Amino acid sequence: MSSTSNPIEPAKCSDMTQVRAGVDKIDAQLVELLAVRFAYMDAAARIKTERIAVRDEARKQQVLANVKDAARSAGISTELVGDLWELLVEASIAYELEKWDAKCA
Image (cartoon, rainbow, N blue to C red):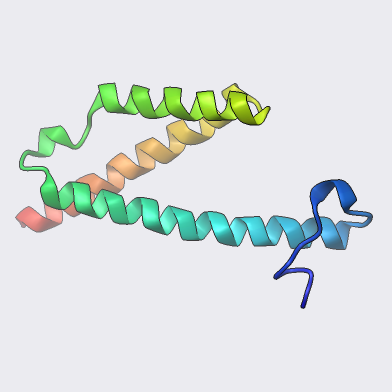
């Protein structure tokens, strides 16, 4: 089994090849999860009956609070995670708007 399919734990890495294999594996997993997340955006665009409902600021703030709590629990920077999710949520909203507009075209 290659180190890419079963990477070494970060604390046990002894060279950059091992680090890079781990990062590459995590990146592939993140892309798979993003594909699922965006499939939920497809569902949201299909379900919402009004375009104005796509941007839901209260829900956005809830999502950001949730991930910051998760970051805190994981022991990583809440600011960094918050910034990343701000970009992700805005990209998701833009994606959902495109999908919503396409269904109405």
